[in-house]
Structure formats: C-alpha cells, structure tokens
Image 1: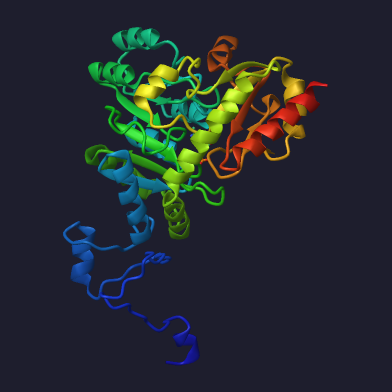
Image 2 (image 1 turned 90 degrees about the vertical axis):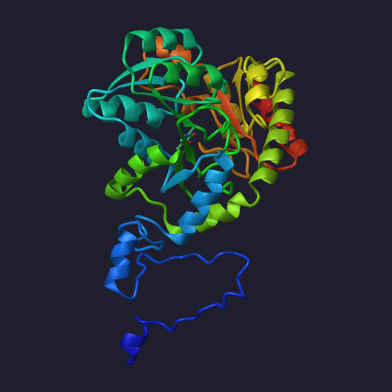
Amino acid sequence: MKPRTRVTHLPTVTVPPDNRPLVAPIHQSVKFSFDDVAETRRNSAGERDGFQYSRVSNPTLRQLELALCDLQGRDSCLLTGSGVAAIALALLGLLKAGDHVVYFAELYGPTRALVSRLLGRYGVSNTMLSVDDLDALERLLASTPTRLIVFETPTNPVLKVVDLERITALARAHGALTVLDNTLAGPHNHGRFDVDVYVHSLTKFVAGHGDVMGGAVIARQELADRMRHDAITLGPTLDPHAAFLILRGLKTYFLRWDAHCANAQRVAEFLAGREEVSRVRYPGLPQDPGHALAARQMHGAGAVVSFDLATGLEAGTRFAEALELFSIASSLGSTESLVVPPALQQPRGLTQEQAAWSGIGAGTVRLSVGIEDADDLIADLRQALERSNG
Ligand SMILES: Cc1ncc(COP(=O)(O)O)c(C=O)c1O
C-alpha cells in the first residue's frame, strides 16, 4: 500500500475474545461492512444481527439503549441528539392529521410549542389543560376523541406531582396514548405505571455532568417500532461519542441522584424557614401538596426546588446575581448548582388563565441543586437572600 492508501485503510487491531476491555470501546464509525452482499441483505431484512449505518443503529448506542430499557422497565429505546428531539420524535411518530392531543400549561415550553405550533400546522388539534385538574381531563376525554396525552411529573419549574394511576387509567379507558416526559424524575422512576411512552432529556440527570446532550424515547416494542421507522427518515440520532459520555455518566447515576436529593431536601427545608420566601415547592417537604403522591410514586424527589421571593421579580434578579456557587443557567440535573431567576422564566405564549395554571409567579426562582457540600450551598443561599433583601 502506498501512503495515501495506508492512511485511508488503517491497520486493523483485533482484541482476542478472552482479552476484553472493561469499558466498551466507542464505535465512532458511520459505516459497518459485511464481506458479502448476501449477508448485507440478510442484515437489512432483519434476518441476522449486525450494523450498517449509524443513523439507523450503532453498537455504542445499542449499549446505552439496553441500559435505559432496563432502568425504565420497557423493551425498546430510541436515542436522539437532544431531549427536545426525543419529544418531537415521539409525537411526530404517533400522531397524524385529524388527531387530537391533550397537553398542559405546566409543560416544558418547547413541548407546548411543538403541540400548538408545529403539530397544529400538520392538522393535529389540541386542548390545553392544567395538571391540577384531572376532572377536566376526564370530562374532555368523555366528549372529545383523543389520540394522545403528553405530560410531565414532577412539572418544571413548580414541581407539581401528577397522579400517574389516575391519568393512565383515564387515558386507557378512552383509548388515548400517554407520553410522559420523565426527565425530572429520571429513568429509574415511574416504570411500574401504565405509561405508553417515556421521553427523557439525557442531557440532565442521566449524563449528569453538563458536557453532553442527548435524548431517549422508551416504549414497548410495538410502539417503538412505529417511531423507529420515522426516526430513520427524520434522522435525529445521537452521536456515538455522545452515547459513550452518557454511558459513563450512567455509572454514577444513582450516586448522583441520591446526593442531589439529599442536598435538595436540605435546601428546601432551609428555604421553608426563611421569611423572605413566601412559598417553597419540593415534593420532599412534608407540607408540599405533592408530597404524599411523590412518596407513593417516586424514589427520591429530585434536584429541582422552586420558591417564591415575596419581593418579586427585581429581588429575584438581585438574589440570583448575589449567589456565588449557583450559576445563572437554564439546565438542571448536573453536578453543579444552577439558578433560574424569575425574569428568565416568565411563561410565554399563554393566556392569563393558563399562565396562572403554570404556577410561575412574579417571584418564582428555580434551583437545580448540585452535589456540592450542602452546608456551602445553604451558606451561599443565606448570604444571597440577605444581600438581595437590603
Ligand atoms: C422537562 C424537560 N424536558 C425536555 C427538555 C429538553 O432537553 P434538551 O435540552 O436535552 O433538548 C428539558 C430541558 O430543560 C426539560 O427540562
């Protein structure tokens, strides 16, 4: 081989089968080849194992898919390049023109936009409700044929906890599919409920370190196969290197989750005792409206704590800027603590009534509590409350 050929056909290194690496290698390859056409065709027809093209499937992605299926307790998983792509794939894959969707004022903004704006353009009608009012959902389902209900629990940023037994039973009774954005609870939660499709932003707790984006759709085989077909056409796939980083994050998932929950509990208890704070929402607090449900439904109440500063929007800005360990940033569920001040999370595109349903007030602050030392975090919150109140 001449040098120009050598550098495009690199030497092959094979690892003997009895000499395995303890961390699976990253299969950073777009293409996988068989030696003959017949085997390539058998693989395309699903008659043998193997890989051909990484938009469709890749061994590193497969490892992550299997791990997430195990955690969430379903048999099929599709990976995407972001959480938003996972939500889009689930809804585009399961809906068609003429269908009706129920969604909620408490949903993540881009999910609301997907339902109202994008799916609206393709002839999918919708009704927005509040997750606080499942009686209204029951009445609506009785009067309006509905294909799908998309919801979150706990909701973001106000941490409302939705009764999973009730919402899934209502959906089942009326022939509607349920799609749960399970990002705030994590994939170890909610698998025992009769939810049809779970979507996750892996960017958050699963990857956990704030250095990689990803998403997942997890469902039973029959539903996942329908969405897989569209995934190949739409092309939202995850990159193998990103999958590798997420797999690495997954190894410490439970350690981080437990540390997030313990710290968030301490922070919520501290805030609940402060006179500058008019309301704290954290399902781990016994006085929280979602506490009893969360205790029944969830293992750990998570990292997100929200609270209202009695003095409102301006004080929220001063408070966030006075914090030293919490950075002003809109993500959640990674190792470091973050704060979203009220000025950055006022609901957009909602009517006055819907904005009231969202539970976001003029002084609502969201914290994503990291895994730092809880004493340091509380000292930081204390000094910021004192400085911003003056
Ligand atoms: C509940 C929820 N779902 C989905 C997403 C979107 O995830 P990503 O940023 O990975 O697209 C977010 C991001 O903040 C979120 O909070």
